[in-house]
Structures are given as structure tokens and as C-alpha cells.
Image (spheres, rainbow, N blue to C red):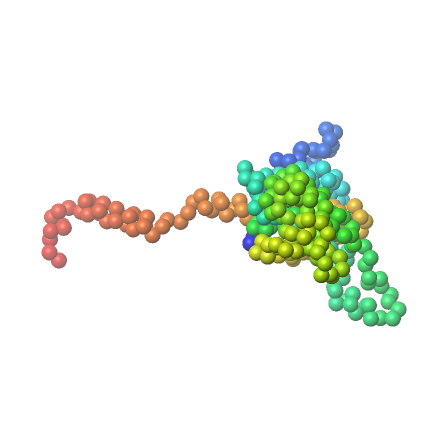
Length: 340
């Protein structure tokens, strides 16, 4: 079970360090050079961490000079500067470089992931409560549109042990999950090597099994339940194997990807601020990077604490006995032989 950081300053500094290792300081040689791309990206991560908007995070930095000093900010950027920076920094190529760096820091020299899971989820386009939406559905002539036919959809591949994201797909739903399997797995294989991948019945198809098992040597565990319920054998060799010899013990770990989706929605919100398709995709990419940075920070602090462990019981006893012998040697014999 992964633990995410709760410190805004630590998240800000970690995002700043990740950007320094993966992005150039400035996007163009003739840029004004008032703020580096590292600083702007760290502020965008802080915005998602605090669940606020561009105006709110700019005001937060102005009220907390310690946060600005942590990333070497001399002047607080205007909120429009952050909005324009998000258009540039949250495109596909910079996000890919940032995600590569987070995976590199998380995994180190170890590239093998024993068990990974794939899933997708939809997010809200508005911050209206579900209770309000259900109430408006019962009104005869609703004055507000409460049925959303399009919504942002996020698909991820993650490690079931650490909840760390290795690949993502930011699109607009509703769309079938089965078409996203190959692109997500291929993207994750660029960063790590997976032994087993778990998925629900939405990804069930003979082509997905063949892509994972025959082309890449990954053991796919997907229940053969796609389509109408029937007692006939499934079409395809791999799907029939899933019906006869399904690994229930391994499939139980698939619930960890549902936990990851819950972590993202609880920590960063269950809705996106963007209104257009591209702005919603940028919000989803920032959610993925912010989630990885919060887990990456916890891992760094955990290993740093392990480098200076607390003294054990035997060490304390040895130190006390040594101090006792020293005091006895320093005590004069005449004083030691006198009766009380």
C-alpha cells in the first residue's frame, strides 16, 4: 500500500527537482527568462496538490514566502503566466519526459515489475454534487443540463504494490476499454518490463491476449466475460484458457488499481477544471504526474530515514557497559575501597 505526501513544500521541491532533470530551463533562447520551466511546473503540481486554481496557487505563494524561496522564486508569477505555461508544459512530449524521470527515480536500476494492472475511470466535468444532479433529473422541465454525454476519461497502467503509474491515456469518454489495451501496454513497456498484467472484463479480447502473451511474453489475466452471457466455450485459444484455468489468486490484486483511482480522486478532486477537450487532457496528465511525485517523495523520505536507524537494544546495553567500565577505571582505588 503506497503512502502519498501531505507536505506542500516537500511536493513542490520534489516536482522542481524532477523538472530540473527532464526539462530545459527555458523553452526558447529568446524567452524573457523571468521564470524557469522547472519553477512553473512545480507550481502547477502544487496547484493540483492544493486542489485550487491558478489564482489560488498564485495567492498561496504570495502569502507563503517560504514556498517561493524553496524553488528559488524571486517574483511570484501572474496567474495568466501559469495558465499559458500549462499549455506548453502539459503537452504530450514534455509530460512523457517528466513521467520517464519519475519512473527512473522510483525504479532505479530495477526495471522488472512482477504484477501490473490496467484500468480506466471517468471524471466529472463540473464540481456539482451528485446529489444535485440526481435531484435535477426528477424535475420535468430541467433548467440545467444534468446528463453529461461526454466526460474526460483516464486510463492507466500501474504497479499493484506501489500504485506507481507507468503509462496513461487521456481521452474523452464514453469509449470501450478494449481498444486502449495495446497502446497502454506498449507505452508501459518502454519504461518497465512486466511479468503479469491484470485487467477486468472490459479489456477481454483474443487480440489483447495475443498482444501481451505472444508478442511480449506477458502473462495476461483477464476474465473471459466480454459479450453476452453464454455457456459455450469462448472464441480463441487464450480466452478458453481463461475459462478453464483462471488464476483467481493473482486476479485479486487487480483491486489495487481501483485503489489508485480512489487516491487520485480523493487527493486531487474527482473533476477537472478544463472545458475543452485539450484542456481536460492537460488536467488529466497533470493528475498523473502529481500522483507519481507524491509517491516518489514518500519513497525518498522513507529510504533517507532508513540510512540513520535508531540504535538497537544490544547497542544501548554495550554503550552503557562501556561507560560503566570507564567510570570504574577513573575512580581512585582508595575511594573505591572505603566502606560506606
